[in-house]
Image (tube, rainbow, N blue to C red; front, side, top):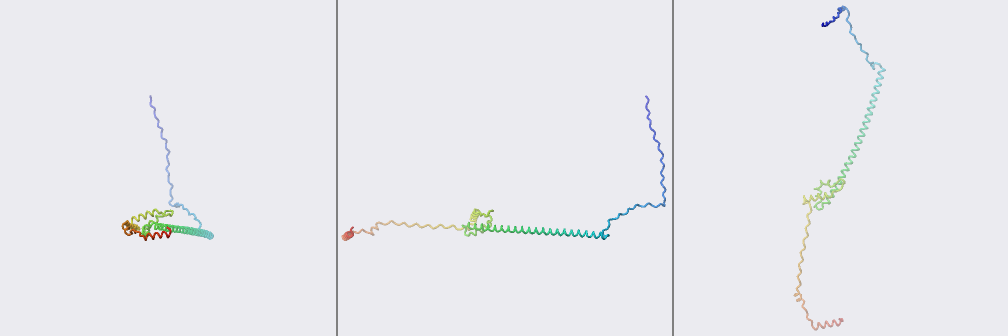
Length: 219
């Protein structure tokens, strides 16, 4: 059996390349100029034209006047707000002052009432003002939220004060002296009585006088 023969294709033929010859340079030729960009014209100056300048001035004046009007309005509004706030603050301060004064008057009245009740209840003291002096810091506690006087608490505090300082209380009244027993009268001595009044013996004259008296008066 025969072996197949592989065939290698031949390389394509290359065409010859002609060398490039540079163009000759003329030493006297002028060099190329660089491109220049001309600046564009800016906006027109408004002050250069009198009419434009006048219009610009009038515009600025109108804006300034409007700005002054707005500023004046703002100042006027700010002044009104400040005045209103001052008025409100003054009214509030007045009401607070009146409320504080009413509270002080009410507390003073309640204190006087509690003092009077305490003095009236201190009847067992030598001087009721002593009880008031010792319990003056407690006067406010004797008045409740409705303004009523707590008489029971006053009695408790007075009893406690007497217990702590008994010398403030009145001395207990002394017992009245006992009446002496009346002496017993002796029984009468009948013997002495009989001796003092002896029995008389009637005489005839006595008997006649008795008879005459009876006869005269119809006895």
